[in-house]
Amino acid sequence: MPRLHRQRLGFAALALSACACALAGEPVQYAIDPVHTRVMFEIDHAGFSKAIGTVSGSEGSLAFDVDDWSTAKLDVTLPMQRLDMGDAGWSASVFAPRFLDVARYPQARFVSTRVERLADNLGTVCGEFTLHGTTRPLCMQFKLNRIGRYPLPPFRHTVGFSATATLKRSDFGITAWRSLIGDEIALRIEAELTRRGNGNGDNNGDARDAGDRTRDPLRRASACL
Image 1: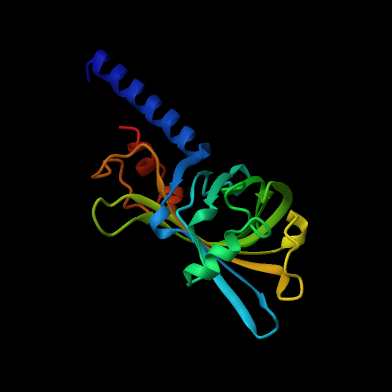
Image 2: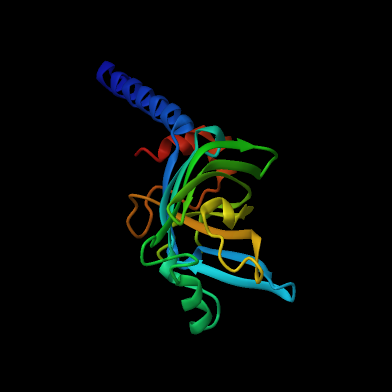
């Protein structure tokens, strides 16, 4: 084999090895899919029922390494004007100044400070939650549902989570209607996020799931080509 050819093969092998090592420890950058992400909440309604509402249209980012969850970073913004109680009048009353005061505080935000893997696909994410102009610590229990390529065009690399949490509205300065509305709010979040920086067609092999990338370093390296 000619010396020049051997050198080229050697350089290629080194480049692939370096690339594989970088991929192994580098979090993937995701953006929230606002169409397939929704926050549902429930709160006691005068003891008769649990009032249920949703917030859609969330925006934000996630840095996530499937092999090391402790490096994950999440930053999510919720547009409070997209809150829906299922009735326009009821939603408007929740938007009012003595409750959420959406005109003054149009957004809620969660920024993670710690992520811990508890089991194979279960974890806890803790961070700072800002609502009604007040920031308090909040932890959520979550489940990693799936990482892979979405099965319909444009076949984007997608990650999906389900999460739950509870908070007290009084901790955020929302104290109106105590005789009618409960203090504790239960949250349920269903979220899908798509990888940043990919065009349609996804030429980097996003059909692989997380397990495939972990088990096959040669295929991981091929993503750099």
